[in-house]
Length: 335
Image (cartoon, rainbow, N blue to C red; front, side, top):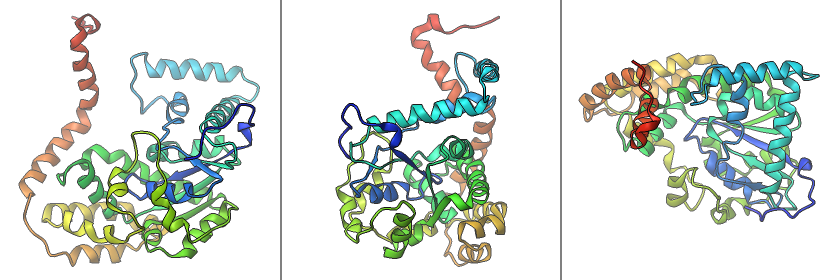
């Protein structure tokens, strides 16, 4: 990442680049490849826009102050503005550009914001940043599922914790891509790790930056500030590698997981998969070709049952309340 900018730099002249993808889709690799260019600055995962754009949404957020009441108040305030919600989005844009600029080098033309759950606010981001650049990164859906399990579940069934990504997120990305096709560029992770220069050439042409083959070698020297992002890829792969492409077959090989995978692919559907660059029937055939085993089946069934309760009870909220027990006077019990 480039050094921070000096005082007096016009931060509003910076153009933001947003990478839209599901988690575990190779977005950190793409981010580091982009950051090898001296006119590109970035930080690990800012998560900067989510609270400010969720401020206009009644659902999807839980807060001690009462989120729905806040949304009502902010909406009432926006009604007083000359251009309503558009003025609010313009203010969010100015706020973000100022911070992107302060986090960037003085010579940077772009700041790359790679925050996986921006798939929840993709349309709002594209409305707030009419001059922004938008990259849609797709990956084989079952590779995403397997990588989620291996990275955050140590190979155990944990998909219930990522339904918002695998269902709502995927749906939002496909719809946004179709709605804004003329403003965006898209690529598949599989093409990216194949190391074909034409993939990156097309991407850099979209950004109006000069491409060099040295990018494929220099990305290992890019250090991303912040604690978030893909630690696994950074430590295991020192070159652009296609090694991860088939790992999902081993992770998802037992009958329970294979059955779930078939249902998930059919839910995504032929049209959405085609828009992402994949074929439904070919993927279903891949599942049939896997040499299965029965390891972990009973654990999976138990965790699927737990997952149903997890989605209903939202235990992350309960855990937050339990942590407050340390300061008992802050726990309010109404009888």
